[in-house]
Length: 114
Length: 114
Image (cartoon, rainbow over the protein chains, first blue to last red):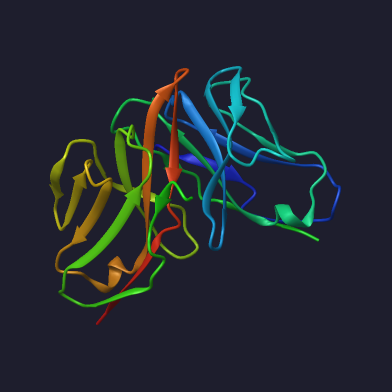
């Protein structure tokens, strides 16, 4: 089944404790992206990657890191999480940037930082 | 100024009626337009895309695009209670440096009343 797999689904952590949210897609998609979704703010892009070893900042990159060492994986790293990073996170992938190619989203990770 | 505007709703329609969801965007160079459906607690799911002026129909869904007015809409005919969800408008901008930014609206919550 074609899918984007995120783990974990739920995570409660303490301020300052490094964490990684994993994302893997099995569709050979070039383009991957991380979003956070907050009430009243919608989906905001954190980082994106156009291919292996090619990553760039989105609209809200502060406090996050990413890497793209393999085409299928795009982990999101919070080196020192803070309470304002409490949010619902989605990984998404797209075949390419051509017209009509929308995103396939992962099932989401609800992160709480206390 | 928000780049993609949607009324957050809720928009309530009776079962069997036509639901009309609207979205405006600010970037005149935008090239592709998407509608995603997001059920509560779930990830967004692509339901329609359009890139030419006019209408595009897929089953009970019709996407309408008017680039001159910078306006895109989604019509849902014969609305069913299972259509109750939040509908996200997403706009893909012009290609810049090999990248096309995708910007999401905050979504319109649709409630279909039995």
